Amino acid sequence: QSVLTQPPSVSAAPGQKVTISCSGSSSNIGNNYVSWYQHLPGTAPKLLIYDNNKRPSGIPDRFSGSKSGTSATLGITGLQTGDEADYYCGTWDSSLRVIVFGGGTQLTVL
Amino acid sequence: EVQLLESGGGLAQPGGSVRLSCEASGFNVRSYAMNWVRQAPGKGLEWVSLMSGTGDTISYGDSVKGRFSISRDNSKNTVFLQMNGLRADDTAVYYCARGHIVGTSFWFDSWGQGTLVTVSS
Image 1: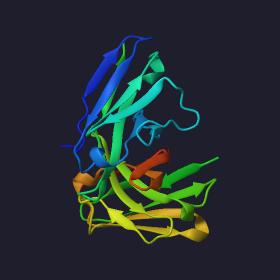
Image 2: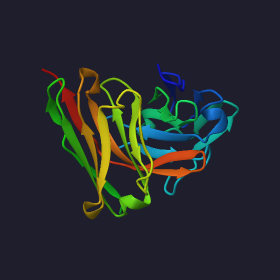
Image 3: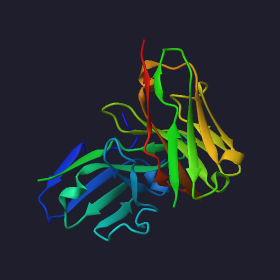
Image 4: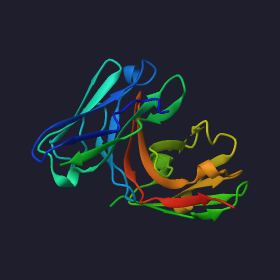
């Protein structure tokens, strides 16, 4: 059972928009910054978003992040088949004093 | 170009030991928080361990505390994960990741391809 809760799967058609939620508590998301990662099994995970809503160099603006209270959201617009992957949120948990990840969300682009 | 190359994975006996290596290039490991993150088969990402750039801060996840140890060889720009008392549930792909810590913000901006550790008799 992950400390951060994500939906197991989401799906949408090419060109459409999808959002992935990440729910936590005051000890993690509520008082710390959130990052998001894209992961194709067997490959190196990729950083998409850090500091809740900042994109590293090279990440297209189709990817966006937001945070409100104890929840965070990753948005992906203009979906492409290449976006099919697992997506993870992550943050620091001040009570557990560990880095925590969500359980991951599998994105299917129909 | 930043690169992280893990090695040392393989088959280990329950109760046995494995030492993983993460050779970094394109940056100095003393300037970043270096981490190990694992993914068990069919499961999500799990943070394992961290060593700060100064080496002053070392942390472990609860599931590996007391069994795993992170260390670093500055001359080789390499980070290690010594894994002792291995259990079947330590079976996973182990990733090395470069971390940033800024106040209450923490993120991993570069990852290796991973090395598989299988614990089985």
